Image 1: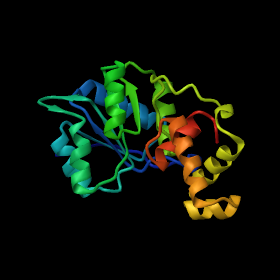
Image 2: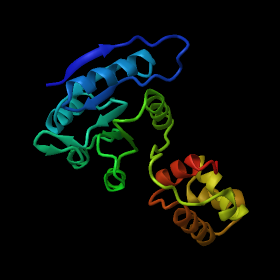
Image 3: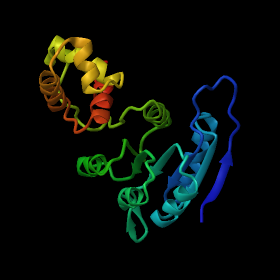
Length: 216
């Protein structure tokens, strides 16, 4: 059963607080501290805590409008990452950030592969938490501990950068073709090269990686 921890009224000067955050963790003291920071920084309007994947799925079924899930990797008797397959099964596309005491690269990459939009170690400071919330709420990925691909704007051709900018604007391939006077085959070739440069597997991840690297 989900326990509502707090509800913070959105202040007039704070333009983008998340409407609702669900924390999935079974450590009471950590939950208390994390909730307090989210409230004090006025990053959310409502924080809800549950202690298991089962309770998380039940809560998200009732509240699909949830803005973000903060998920512990290790819960009593179950793996936190199982939440991703559960959410896919019920069709609830809520972004998830893993927050864990495990900081090894294998755990970070496992979270990324599962579909998490970010990873934050529990040893992170308050500033890192705030930065993470602001980054993922803007549609970016947050993986500061992963060694990012060593790509700079110079690794993409000027034409590829043009394609990337239009991709970030949400244009489909046909519109990119029209805007740049290119054939669809050429655009697909550029996109394939861009995806390879950014180690991305889809358009959303491509744009997020490009923003994280300062390419757009």
